[in-house]
Image (cartoon, rainbow over all chains, first blue to last red; front, side, top):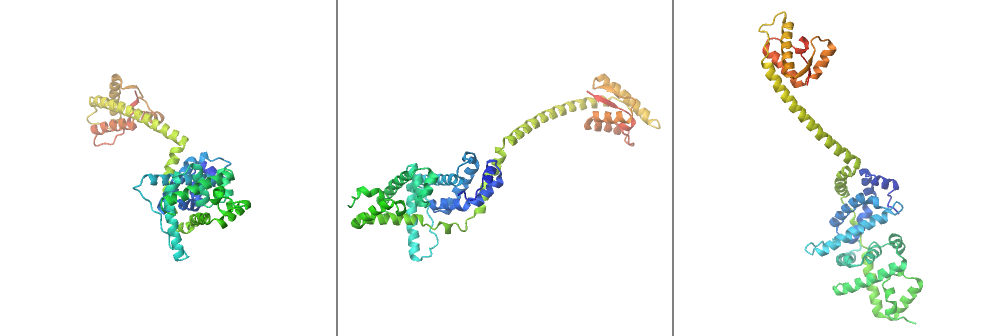
Length: 185
Length: 210
């Protein structure tokens, strides 16, 4: 549940022990990278966000509820930083960060097509997510990008199931409409 | 009875695992008879599948996490030093203390320099015997007595020892700064260039300076 990050590591982080930061990075870097990369689809940008996220953890570890989940707290840092970056990229239209084309999938041509489709969709979504209200943003990312179950989204956000479904409906409908408007669907 | 498109619209944007069994029946019932909604739903599910099936785990390979660690650590380690209030206080205190010591040191140095200049002037007027012989010690001592008297008169010293034992001699040495000692030695060496004469071995010389 907590990515192997023990209370002891958290305590040492609170005590500003640099060695604990190294330990934390070792335990969580894959999770962090995957979480961010799912949204950015860009290695360089993901690494920048990770760097910022770990520094934020270091500075703000005191604000983590002692009874709260480190994983949820950390993921919200990662998500917020990624959304901030998306928003910034959208604003600075001169800086266009392209999603990467990953090596061809094992499924051959079909896999490659799918990958291209994903990249196009992600390219659009990266600019689209920052325009959503906060709750919809969170729910949409957790459920439709990070692929968490409804139960996990409830645990992480504290929202009710009906509220989550309602947010998902509004966000998904808006995405469909905006994709059509942009000529993507 | 088949529901209208608008009546089940909210359900159309939920994935099968988000629908209750009852809602699934409603959706499936509607889709079998509404081609337009069926297309919309297929498109929605396809898009969502594309999103959640991204090959993230493959992309993680080859990431330079060592570089990431270096970058993060380089930014937080200076922060550790800054963040410690105890270290911060110690640093501040030591800076202030160093400043005070520097002021004291410079003050003392200035005082010593002034004192040395005056000693030099005083020494310049003191005459030593031209040819010290077997009675060197007494001759020098006599000269020193003259010098001491002169120094006392000028107010540069306020005490002197005329009869010394080892302990008092050591004490006397401590009262002189290194510069003053060197100055005295130079003076004696100038007067007696062919002899090695220590002011401390031969006489008590100056005891306490102001």
